[in-house]
Length: 84
Image (spheres, rainbow, N blue to C red):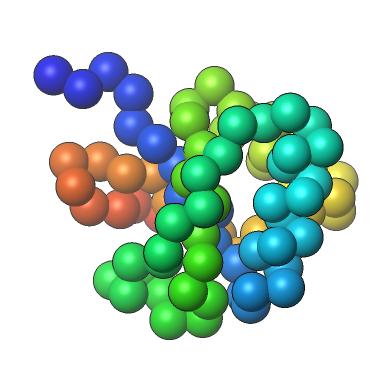
């Protein structure tokens, strides 16, 4: 049984994804760049995968306007559910 699901940050475009990567690295948040599943969105082909312990920090950064995220999805049983 899997204990933690991962979260996928989705952006409006590639530039925002690259800027988001830099912001997260600046806060020492581990991440993995991955293709955005087309079942989620067709707006940007690049997503950022993050692990559970960091999601609330990222939500705060989004609320503070430090990172432009279109949506955050949580992976559950090989599918994705909208988180915010």
